Length: 355
Image (cartoon, rainbow, N blue to C red; front, side, top):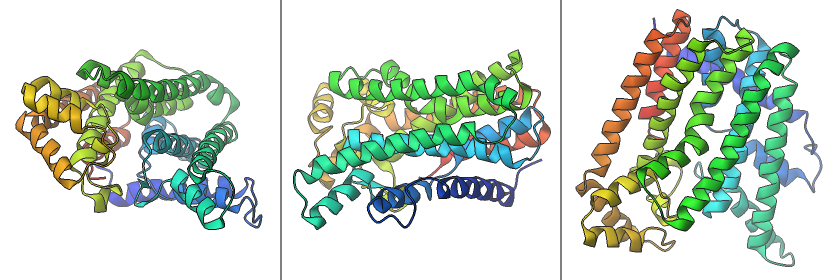
């Protein structure tokens, strides 16, 4: 049995409807001219995305016997607000200009300051406003989760996981900053960042939340599924993101080609490259990586080194290995047939995506 595209589209529609209904109730009111830019930035940021985190949560719920009720879509959709919060803060820390093909939040607010001719630094205003927007989205995420309408006992059972997931995310953001600052960049250190910053809260923890919301507790098989399937899909998801950050098509990723290289991202792909590179190539990587003015020739030089060292193929092979192990773990889990098919398709979609 497979979940057809229409079924996945229906899930996205439910998630987007829940987000729209929740945000519509929040301040600032659409008619407030002073606070309207904050609301508009939130609306546009929440309008995009693949909705993978809500999907993993929802199919965890269904896998443990949960039924289709509006409340689960609201609880799952709250994870999109958490994701949006992380993206806003991530773009500030990375000084990214674009997000999904549009100006990142801090650049949007910076441009508003410049156009208005206000006092002070436009860049500082932009960063400050974006940080506040990210904080607002984080607050909204927690509120949407708490007021989803699911039974109190279900939310109480899942709350420790929800709290731990958010702590892991913030620790992952710090570890990412630390990795770029200290230049350690071993595969193991990059993997740790990937797990905390992306892998766990993208797949493993949303799945765990759905399972516990439906069952009221975490049975041993559920924990095994979350680590054996969820964690491995999360790592493969981040490896794919590493590759797209260097080799992705800007028309599909919404970011300039090689942007991760300009930002100096110390990814698992870069770690593999440095480990296999000749001394001369390793020196070139260290010299060019993190140069905000890196031109197309510099991007191409780094791409060539990454490819020549075999790091690109090695990461592709790792994605395949992690995916295979994850699907094997999924086969052993006593989830519902429909959930098993959906989780299989989600794993493949998350690890082979183009954006």
